[in-house]
Each structure stands twice: as C-alpha cells, then as structure tokens.
Image 1 (cartoon, one colour):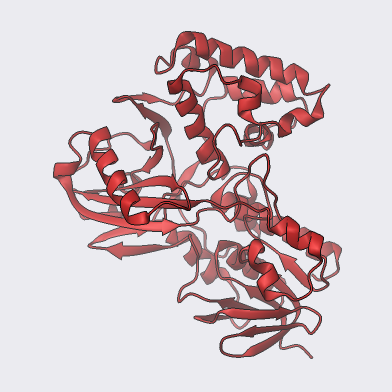
Image 2 (cartoon, helix red, strand yellow; image 1 turned 90 degrees about the horizontal axis):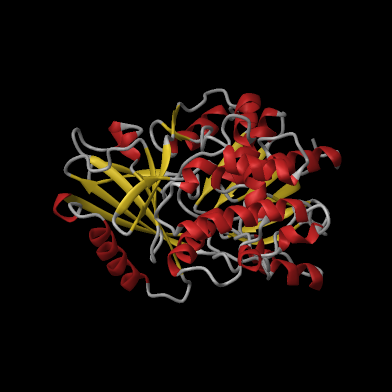
Length: 437
C-alpha cells in the first residue's frame, strides 16, 4: 500500500493550492520542495526593515475569478485585500492614467492621434473578421497592425504585450491574449461584444493587493490545510519520478503514492521521468520561459502618491508597484517601498542589467536617487511559460498513468497567481473525471 494518496512535487503556489484542495477532500498528501521554503515566487521577506515580495504582484480577477472560487471553497482563513486602484503610464517624463475606455484613449496624447484612431479602427475591423476566420486569434498583434507605426507606438504596444504574455513583444503576442483578458467578464460569445468591453470598460476594478504582502496568501493556504493530512519536506530535490511504480525519489529518500502531481517546470519532466513519448518530449521542449529582474527601492519619503501601479514605457519597460501604499507596515514609518519589474533576455549579464536598470529608474523619475536608502534585486522566472504565437503549453493530463501536471505552464489564461489558480481548477476537474477524488 502506498504511503500517501498524492505526492505533490513542488511547493510553489500551484502545488500548495492543489495540496489544500486535496487535503480538504480527505486525501493524504506529501509535498516535496527542493528549496528551503514554500511559496515559490509567492513569498515575502525582510530586507533592511522593508518587507519585499518575490517580484511585484497584483491579484487579478478576484471578484469572479478562480482564486476567489478556491478561497470560498477551501480557505479557512482568507487574506485581506485592498483595491489596486488605477494603472498609470509613464512615458517621456509624463504620467497619465491608462486609457481604459474609448474617450480616454482618444485623449491619450502620449501617442499620435492618427495612430490612436488607426488602432481603434483595427480593433473594430478585427471583431467583424473573427466570425469568418477563427484562426485570426492566433495571429500576432503585429500581423494585424502592420509595421508602419511610429517607434513610440511600437514601444507602447511592446510594453503592453510583454506584461500581458509574460515576456513577448507584439510580434509574438497572439491576439487571443487580449480577448482572454475580457472573456471571463462577459457571458457573450460574440467577439464584437468582447472588443467593445475592451473599449468601454471602466478599468481594473477587480484587481487587488493583499494586506501583509504576497506572503499572506501563502500563509492563508498553509494555515487552511487540515492538520495531519499533509506533510511538507523542504530541501529535498526530486531526482526521479516513476509513475508506474508510484514512486518519487529525492536526494534523501524514496516515497510512494497512488497519484503523483508535478508542479515544477513541465519542460524539465523528461529529466525526471524515463521513456516519455518522443512527441510529448518535443512538445514540452517548445515551452518558452522568460526571466525577470526586480528592483526594490526603500525610499526615505513617499514619492509615489497615486493609489495604483505604473507602467513605464521604455525601453527598458517596467511595471512599478509601490506596495507600501497598500499596506504602510511593509515599510518603516514615513518611508515608502516600491518594486520595479523588468523582463530581461536570458543571454544578458545580470550584473550589467542591474546597473542599467538602476540608472534607468533614476533617469526616468527625478528625485528618486537622493531618497533611496535600500536597494535589493531579485532575478526570477515569473511565469513557467510565456504565451506566444509559437510557444506550447503542457496539459494537465500526461500520457503516463498516475502522473498529472499543474502550474502556470499548463494554462494560458491570465497571469501569475490567477493563472496558477486556473491550473488548479483544471487539475481538480481532471482528477474527478479520472476517479482520483
């Protein structure tokens, strides 16, 4: 008889949410995590009196999305959330609210009026073409818009695409990513209705930040897991997975379970599981990832006054979240904490990127440098898969019996914790269909 009902490989947010749901269903779960901590890129820690998150985070789709559904069903203790506020665009020294609706877009003078009108007309034209050409949504944003745009407009669109997909510019971003952003908000199946929702909506009303930092979500998950139903082993790297033998081997021991859930990088699965079908290995090899560099600045006084985050159009492009605006306890009294997220190429030298990024921040926002008292960098992989026109995603169900996948490389919808939550919902549905729960 197996020691556990389930072994979850990986103690990131996807693995923890899966463990919580399974334990609440009465299943015995073992979680194996190679690092010394749980939460993956959903953690917070102290740096010189400031509490930084692992990268900048804002929780999306909280009003009706998958994380809320999981919290309502499984959480015993829930985090407290604060409304995100507005998105602002910083470009050429100007700061303006993001143009969420048609009226605001037409007044968004950071881009030429002729190109603003062209983009609107293109969106409306595309909405009529979708019904006759279902493959259109897989085309890139650049395919639809062409290459005759000014550099400012290209930079703006590249910036938006990069942070919507996890790293792709408009030449690689599928149109479907932007349709997905609105899909969950409307029951209409009409593309035109979805496009109109993009044009006329009021903004990111269902986006929030957790009081206490992103760690509060991880803490709520762990504290909600029933006692004696889950066991956690950190500092144990999985070396081999044998689904047929229902065994997982680590650097320390061998463990058995009826079902194995892998929440690590799906692209690494061939290193752990022998004799995977060649076609499956090839698909996993097409999963694309990006790396990010986050700069945290501890400021002597409050410089970011707005309730919301900023999108800095470069290059380099950045997403700026002043987290202490949501929870003043994340910084010393009277001080401010802000995280600056950048996407960087894999082949780049991280130290050089750190120097360039710091200089870019100081140049983009006068007054910052003389108020900095803490700097802290993080080199992370924010998403296990970027959504591009050429990339692949893994599926929850593998071609191997007793082995399932969960995580942000098994689901295209949304980003970050929300995408991870979608993947957990998918996993639970598949396990139920297969009679595992």
